[in-house]
Structure formats: structure tokens, C-alpha cells
Image (cartoon, rainbow, N blue to C red):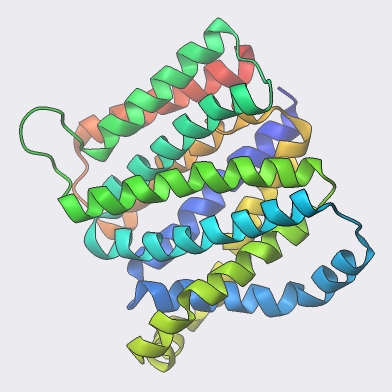
Length: 283
């Protein structure tokens, strides 16, 4: 794997964990998410309109763009509900782990990508560690409530769906910046009704305006870094590595949110790192 791709993906993971931390700490999750993406929507609109006016795309590509927007609209809605019902240290690794597993496996089929035996071993280590870190147990009581688990599963499905769709759109010639703007538009549309009904827009801005502005950079910036890496390296290789964000999320949960982690969660984070190194060096 190229060093540049690895650095891009690691940076993407860190920035992703940070804006999710901001979301978890916000007052009204849907309002906060709508605010950070609305700021970016306004900023990127001129360049988006200019690019789209110059592109000549087939109907299939426009269909993929509409599909991506639909999936991401579902993603942002479900994400706000997942953080409303569950702890970050449990919900975050589970939904990211499920998304990584489905994305890597599907990309092997859809894009004819390949992993070595070591790559498969690293992928298995990451998946096992992520699910263990989430607190899910197949026997006995689970540490994750049913509502949070349901929303986390649906978010994981959405992550896989829009990642695979965006890979096809990138291959068709659409820039990463345009893809980011498509997601901003979908987020704006999907959350505007819950935001209006909540009547907490003014309160969210007055209390969290600093993290809203910072999140408006980190949220699109995280996926933008990943999209650039996607252009340089096979998706099956980099999708699991981005899940180092779960390690960052665990550390942030310990330091900032003071969630109960224990040595088991730290050990699982170290296993994730081992899986990442395996894929990066020998995948």
C-alpha cells in the first residue's frame, strides 16, 4: 500500500471520530448534524454547480448519484437516533465494523479486487475486535440496548451501501468534492423536517456554535480524505483500515466522555491496530 494512501485513510479515521464525538456531546443530535452539513453545503455549492454544468454523464451515473443521496439521507437520520439511544463507545465501533465488513466483502465481487491470505486474516481480526469492542454477546445479556443495536445495524448497512455506490460514481469521473456536496444536499433534505419540529436550532447554535463550525470542516473532510485514498488504492484494502477511527473513538470516550471501558476495550483496540498493520503491509 502506498504511504500517501495510508496517511489519508488514518487521517480520515481520526477526523471521523472527532466529529462523531461532537455529535454525541450535542444537545439535539439531528439539529447538530443538520447544522454542520448545512454550513458545508453553502460553502461548496458554487464549485459543485460549476463542475456539474461541465460534466457529461450517462443516465446510469445520475441514477447512482440519486441512489447514493438516498442511502446517505437514511444514514444521517439513523445516525442521530443511534447516538440518542446508545453510548459512543458501543454504537460507534459496531456500526463502523459492520460497514467495513460488508464493504470489503462486496468490493471483492463488484470491483474484482483482491486480498491476500494475510489480508483476509487482518480483516477477520479487525471484524472480530470491532464486534467484541461493541459489547455484543451472542449468549447472555448484551451491553447494548435493542434500539441502539437496531439503529447501529442499519447505519452499518448504509455505510456499506453509499461507499460502494460512491466508488462507482468516482470511477465514472465525478470528483470527490462533488460527491461530498451530494451527501450534504441529502443530509439537508433528510433532516430539515426533524430540525424544524424540534425547535432547538437557536439553542444548538448558541451553545455549540464552535463545534458546529469545526464539525463542518471535519465531517466532509473525513470522507473527502477517504475518497482521495480510494482513487489511489483498491477499496477492499483501505475500507478496513479506515476503521482505526474506532480506536480513536475509544480513546476519546475514555478521556472526554468518561465512559466505562476497561482493559478489555483497550485490548480490542490494540487488536484492531494489529489487523490494520497486517492489511497495510501484506494485504
